[in-house]
Image (cartoon, rainbow, N blue to C red):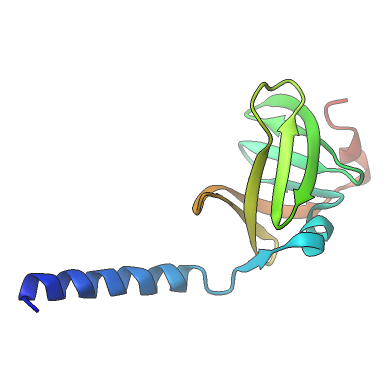
Length: 128
């Protein structure tokens, strides 16, 4: 194998190891565990969005300072939601968790990250 090919092969191995190390400690949530993790929880980043996942599938929240409402559900091993006033199709994500931190992935790419916290009694009336 030529030196250039060897260097490319070593770089590829290094990138793969870095990717695996970055995901160390992250657990993929699936099925019922996914439902339990999000039910009656607030998911947000403290700045851009805050979504409240109510029992029974109601979704409320704020997205970039604007109120939003919709519905959520778990389909197989993905968290799915659809906003009521959007013409966009339902969005479904793979979910990874480490402690209270959540990362959502679409087609293998991270698209959203934030923290889960239990809903406070006064938060259940957001955007009504």
